[in-house]
Length: 126
Image 1 (cartoon, one colour):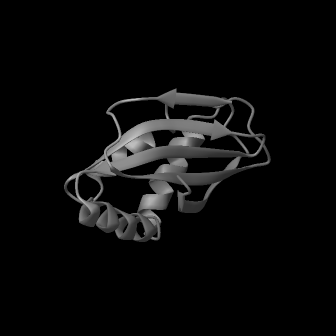
Image 2 (spheres, helix red, strand yellow):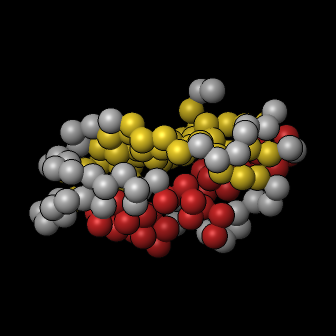
């Protein structure tokens, strides 16, 4: 299932990113409104680069995963490169990954006995 949310038009400098969570043993029901907030929250994390914005965010889900997908845009090629470096580093911080895992856990209909693990964050092919 896929829920999509469009905001701004993409600029000439835009890259698609994804944040992947494994959900074990499996998803019963996922309120997609909460995980899609992860893309909205990125700009408040420390070090978020200036002159970039998040656009066109949505959630993909399967039986045992959810993935937040979004575009990051900028008018500046340097700003988009800076975002890529920041994006690769920010999720290595345990406090960041723990907060995001809890957010996804609370989006589940029955979070008891379910483990949510942030397993991957990557730039996707445009």
